[in-house]
Length: 246
Ligand code: MG
Image (tube, rainbow, N blue to C red; front, side, top):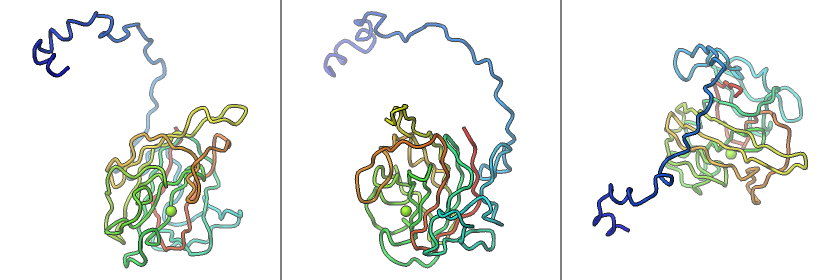
């Protein structure tokens, strides 16, 4: 083919195809009828826009509960919430499906442990699909287990980690999975993630629940579920958490 192109030139190569093979479908389509709503952006792209639900403003975990329904026991101080080891995961009182999520986190300034034991936490979309939180600054682990991985499914496209103790951000665009009436998945979940502003997951198709000890699979669930943050035993901090329904 390369020789063929070089001999004929690109123009004559394209001319050798019937026009119908090259043209895209030119059927007319209707213009959108709905006016896009006005959304006042935040002061910076890290600040919540006018239609966001602020899930944590640095003062109180009132939007969160322990997984047993009791008040969240993580420590709130100086504008952040810190995982209190062995108190368990926390999850939102509200439920979400398709969403845009902004969340900031910091792993301990003095690194402790290696691999998965260093600054491990996680953002579980719909309580099931984990975007890994980990200190991945000079810390080797399996690639689909480092910061920004869709846990045990997709490595991030790059390692955009800041140093331990520094604040980092995830901006996550999530499309929830769809199930039919028999509970069979008809559309897998999709996720896009920016880590500190760097695209690290580009609309990947999630294979199912992000287990650590068995293959991913889908189990039908409601169209909206809480957001959950992981207590992996490490004092990871969170701040400035907001979400927009899509
Ligand atoms: Mg984790």
